[in-house]
Length: 194
Image (tube, rainbow, N blue to C red; front, side, top):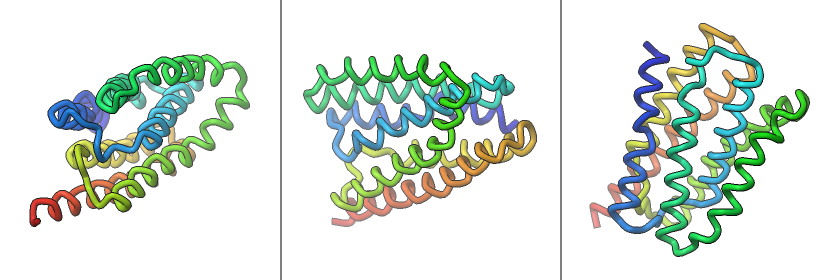
């Protein structure tokens, strides 16, 4: 149930966020550094799971999440008027996939930094929200769904691979996703109250 519900949720995880940006015709409230770090964290995590041959159902959502983040990134560049910046970013992401798999030590080192990369992504989004005191086009639903997938992945990790590095990552991400969700909801209420 956890595997399939996670896949189902991830199939639509970023769609509320993409839709909010598209409807607002603005990327206001979204931190580009946060989005790039999240994408990097997803890429490293997917490559690590693939490299070590973990069961496909334990990471099948990551290609979906990466595709949705790429769409969100392209929307960000489009609505901020910086479409030309997308090409170098995409080139770095694609080449990273190949570099990560060159040597075992590279993927292991990258995975050890993956939790920090992903946590930094969440902290950058939080910082941006706290600084601007404006949730803008940020979707609380997307962040809440991300928290759900972390909770289910804690269960599936304990039941399948029992990989401590992966488990720690999901626990940290669960906490931070809940914190971002609460912050977005707080600033959405503040705007509505005014």
